[in-house]
Length: 301
Image (cartoon, rainbow, N blue to C red; front, side, top):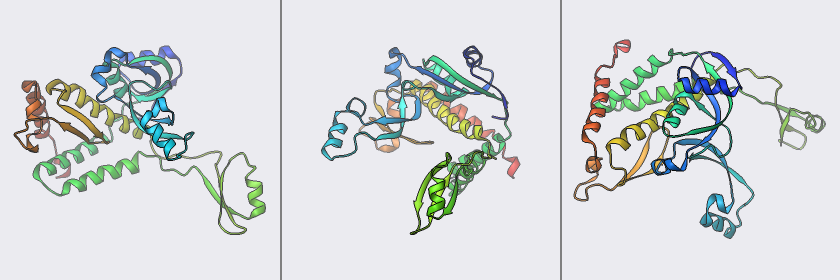
């Protein structure tokens, strides 16, 4: 995403941008998946978001609630957890255009519109990512240890170029008198005693400067979820029998699956025992192989 084109809080403008599927945007909406879609989505709910979890029995379940009571753990504490959801938990959540369109295609119903920020299309970063990813894939196929090196380059670039690492707090070393005055300031954030008469006082500045493109980080995170879920719902689910496999653990760029395959074969059988549409699977793999074959690496040769 490039520079911002416009921002709006008018529901009809937000709805039009989402429905037309022409603009690059980030929208803040509220919604849910209808119960008719639960059987298709429950194995891996497609809304990945951090939410606050209250330690109530109806939220965390009878077993965990009893465990906390038995061990005198704090019951009023709220924990923030990354969860997979079938609705926005009754609150507004932010999605980029690709992620939101995929959710809508899976049956997501938007019930309320809060805001939208529309951006110019910018592909300046794309050649670097494409070339580095292509080299990394070639290294994996060749069994080279350089694969980890290229992965580190991409990860480092994301952390440096797109994450906002600016400092939004100022820390001053003050004596008791200065600390007493500072803690009554409206921008006061916290105090830590250093010695008998010296305190570290953190203040929140009135203004802050950001030199990074925050929207690039937002789009990178949501695009990762889009490709992740798109591969599962529009490839794996269409060519594999869903009953014999179960999702165990998911990370940013990896997933762990338990497969009930052919008991007479070892782990190297992969998915062959649960393929239900061999033609569709071969077509998808062929398209991937063609994409790898036509990659242009001349820029780094």
